[in-house]
Length: 377
Image (cartoon, rainbow, N blue to C red; front, side, top):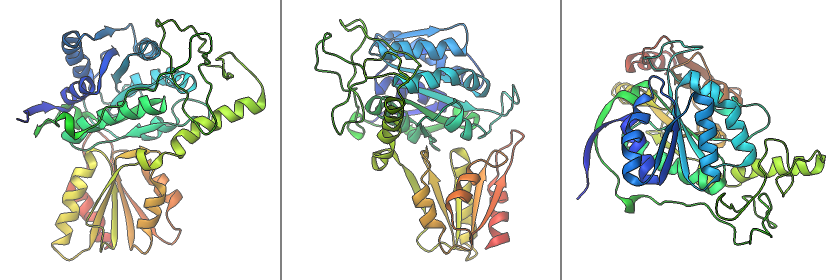
């Protein structure tokens, strides 16, 4: 019999992580994500896992990387200021290809901003927050049951492609409660990292065979000793400045995402078959956007909603296709214009693109999106 729960989004995040196999949480409390750490502190010891509160967000991210390299599925959670602090170590995780999951419960900013109010203003930071050319995956669910499944998917993608995966929610989703049936294990798959079949003497941590993009892992403390550095490195893990090796390795890291978009990409399309006005929204804002689309259809305005769940890499090909021939495209987001920049980049130049943007810690109400649709529809 399915378990019916009435959990907050932060509780869902913790429980889904455990279901995915997370057995290490390195955290530091920050509103509005602190409940994730609180639940993990209680639940992980019950599952033979480890919870540790570090001295700050930087150390918490470092602990997650260390745990991942030692073989544990690891996660951390934070909010805007903490997400900023984690960026250097997120870049390190990209370079050493350490699988881990970072949950960002977004709040108003910049700086300490609005600690108890929602925002969606970390979208670009999720993509470009750490320096250098790096590939990243970021997911943005809109419903709590979906959040449960996307946390599991984040772990799967992280383990399969050996990289940090970011899950973007916000204060609304983190603190709201919904009644839902917890997905049964047969409704999802669990992916565990591919481990090397080579002996410690033969093993090179970043060696790939022809056609492979993800090097098999060896875990520390299992007889393997190898070097991991944030410097560009060769197959042995030791630094190199060889231009050909550096470029080849960086391109490989990008290609392990680019060549697997069919598995990574995820989105929802609502009433788009005959839509003349395209509304694009993600996360909690998409909930109100769907209500708005349903409302204007009562008056004969043919609007439809595109909701990206995988926000990075951005679903540019599908957005380009959907924008063709539309009267207008409306992008609703709780920031002053971030996803709209991607839509403008990929949509056709003759399509009118309108923003429905709002900050200040107050959600975008359905009537505000309705007004924008009526303006263009």
